[in-house]
Image (cartoon, helix red, strand yellow):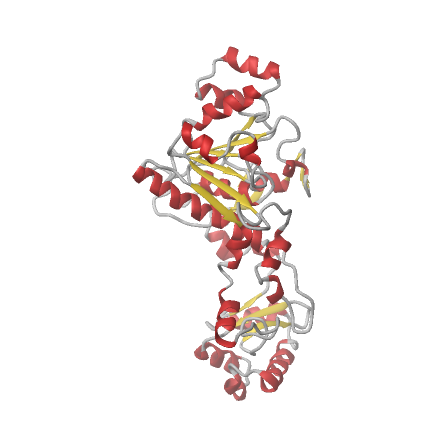
Amino acid sequence: MTDNPNASARLPLTGVRVLDLTRLLPGPLATQHLADYGADVVKIEDTGAGDYARTLGAMGGDTSYLYQVVNRNKRSLRLDLKHPDGKAAFEKLVETADILVEGFRPGVMDKLGLGYEALARINPRLVFCSISGYGQTGPYALRAGHDINYIGYAGVLDQIGTAGGAPAISNLQLGDLLGGTMTALFGVLVALVDARASGKGRLVDVSMTDGVMAHAIFPLTEVLANGRVKPRGEDLLTGEVPCYGVYRTADGRYMAVGALEEKFWHQVCDTLGRPDLKPAHLASGAAGAVARAEVAAIFGARTQAEWIEVFDAVDCCVTPVLTMEESLENPQLRARGMVTEVGGVRQFGRPVRLSAMPSVPARPAPAVAGADSDAVLMEAGFSPADIERLRATGAI
């Protein structure tokens, strides 16, 4: 988690206080990114099950790996927002917060009396981010959904897959992570910059469907140029041309060929010993299919390891398709600090490297809900007696 072990500079988000009401994946990962760069993120979990990601999927002891790898560097406070005392305690925390992130269905925070307008009266500088599937407005706003639904509506799922096959589903959730996590980060940081300058926060309305649709650039250009998209598996990036695609090797593995530029394709052809294929660079239709079949036959004659040895010495955008366990050991990714260990659990490092980042050991995700309740509440001005009273009433 260290970008520069010799640096003594402050983390860039030091002093930024974040109240995190989110669960599962998009919101928790967004706030973890903020925490990784220095924000003080207080994860607020209810007094019942808390964030149910704690018990979702593969378990790492009493807490799931999912929860552990998207909640590091945070503190946990248990709070019942439906309880009058819990609501009052939350409002006290809002007074000194910079950012609030929530992922409930639209209207839930308003029903609790904790919507943006109510909290802006307490703290006008507050950046209030709501992450939802379809946004706070529109005819689908209150519908349930998951990643597969969001990318389906955005016109993206239709484009993923092989020619003639059904749409393919990736376990890299484009809607949740591109549409939710990264769009929320972009939104809250834009609003935070403005709040620091103007003294007034904003409501940041993040629709995961909007966020992923806004990045579907290639399908949009096809519609603009031709009035419709090409079928999946038949456009420039999904199988139309021989210079861009995946090719199976003799051992059932794959090589990724990304030689879109002519100079790279020519190097590929020379390396494969087939200079006659150079004119087929961007060939489509029947000619493209013939060229792709020729290239496939060549790659199918050797193992992936053999092809790695061949192409590691050639700068032409041909690389192996690695498994995740192989990626975790990849020398480039490890040299960049993308594989780290926090609390004995391997995790991904910070995705953005900044100059003069100080060496700060990462803290594991809160082991239990409410692990930091007393400390967080005391910082907000509650006395030990106040905290015991809140605990006795069931508000925390």
